[in-house]
Image (cartoon, rainbow, N blue to C red; front, side, top):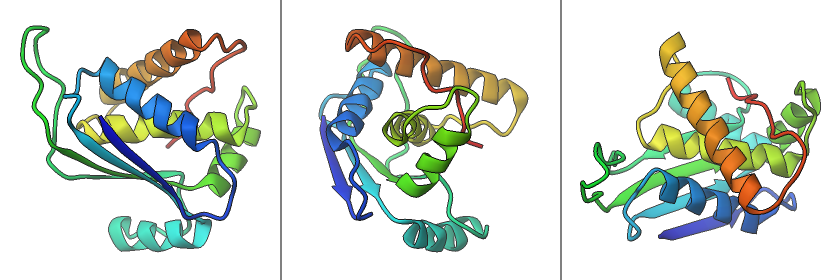
Length: 165
């Protein structure tokens, strides 16, 4: 799996954890090991520009996903996963910091960025949360991936609750 993490935000983030959880999420979703993903960490001004340009919405957001080859998890366990370019995930640590502080289960900016990375991966794989049933499926999968990743690393305490909108 080729995953590039590029921090352009000027904020110190745990880039290794972002890389590790992205790799874990893609393996858990059975994405081909030769697929490629880019994660870019930007400041609030850059995120706001992207949010306006692509969503026509004001202000910075927490995460944006830009799919390339529209890869999907294989439908059966014995199917060979396709390989290709997954796309780009853009994260904003300033928004992540605020969301982590305001969440029901307060958590760090890095924990929020890990959650947002999984959220971005799922969007790249075609998951959405516009409808209640889609939201339940996506957020359930997101929680299972984050919990599994944390358990493998022996991390204790509650996992970050979904704060993405």
